[in-house]
Image (cartoon, rainbow, N blue to C red):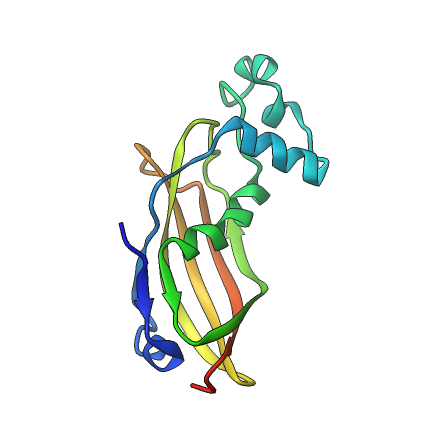
Length: 157
């Protein structure tokens, strides 16, 4: 799967309402969940204790919801790239839901759609719809709408 190249902010504007792509699958491994737990100090047993979690509500350890959100920029970078952008800043979230847990060892991918786009200084304000799928499941693990600010390197606004 290759990264979709978008020719600057001008081409991006033509893609509003379109799917920008689907990321490659990414395994959510226990070491990633453990590292996130250490960094955030959220060491709930449902995330970090496989033995105890085996008898818990999910039948094993699960990823943190906020880990899923933290992976969105990585999944997006593996899906599309906009040329002539000097910086991308996470501005916020419009809405987030976690309809299904991600069990450790499952594979996820992100289906990304450009919901809307507006002006922002020397660049653009993007609203992106993320639909995080779990391999083999019909229910998404995360549905989120992110807001990002793009600074255009070439003044292509």
